[in-house]
Amino acid sequence: MVEALIQKASVLIEALPYIQQFNGKTVVIKYGGSAMTDPAIRKSTAEDVVLMKYVGMNPVVVHGGGPAINRSLKRLGIESVFNQGLRVTDDATIEVVEMVLAGSVNKDMVALLNVSGGNAVGLSGKDGGLLHAQKIIPASGADIGHVGRVTHVNTHVIDAVCNAGMIPVIAPIATDQDGGTWNINADTAAGEIAAALHAEKLVFLTDTPGLLENKDDDATLIHNLLRADIPRLTQEGVISGGMIPKIEACVTAIDHGVTRTHIIDGRIPHALLLEIFTDKGLGTLVCK
Image (tube, rainbow, N blue to C red; front, side, top):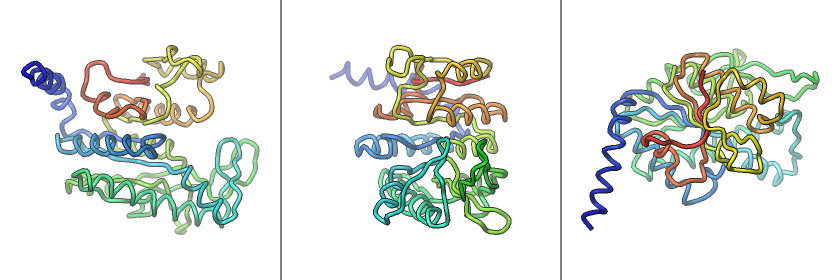
C-alpha cells in the first residue's frame, strides 16, 4: 500500500519540471484516429486535455472527421472521391463536410471535454474569421472543388478563448473574403494554427507508434527526425500516404518557431500525458 502511494508521488515529482516548463504555454493537439473512435481512448484523451488546462497550459484542439464525413455522404448517396489524397469537395459535398465537422463531430468533442471537467468551446474557421483560405489547385491541374489552403489565422479568436479559461476545439473549415466555405486538411490546419500561435508544442495523435522506417515493423520507429532528413525519407518512401501532411505540418510549425512537434500513438491510454509529462515520451519527435 505504502509502496503504491510512493510510486504515485514519484510520478508527480517526475511531472513537476514539465508542469513548470509548460505553464502558460500553448500546445496544439491534432485529434484524430482511434482517439476519436475508441470510447476508452476518447475518455482518456479528454481527461488529458482537461488536466493540461488545469495545470496551467493552454491546449488547443484541432480535429478531423473523415470517417464521419464518409458515413454521412454514403447515407445521402454521395460518392466519396479523392484526388492525390485530397477529398474532391463539390457544392453538395462541402455542405455535408461543414455540417459534420463544424456540427456533430465538433460538438461531440466539446461535450466530451466538458463532461471530463473542462470548459470547452467549439469553433470552426468561420468563427471570427479564424481561418482564411484560398483554393488549392493540385499538380494534376484538376478542379477538386472547395478544398483550400490556409492563408491567414486570426489568433485573437483563439487567444480570447484561452485567456477566458476555456479550451478551443477547432473544426478545419475556413472562409475567404467573399464568405465562401473551404475544406482544409486537419493536419495542415493544425500546423498552420501552431505556427501562427508560436506554440510550444504541436502533437499529432495517430494510429501508428510514429514514423516507421518499415511501416510493417513497429520496432523501426524513428524516435528523432531532423528536418534535414525529411526530403530523403520522402524520396525513399518512408514518409508516404497520410504521414506526408503530418510531416509537412511539423515543418511549417518548426519553421515558424514552434519548439517541438510530435507524432505519437493515440491508441495508448493517456498518450498526451505520457508525452508531455514524462522523461521518456512517445512516438517521433520532429525538430530542426
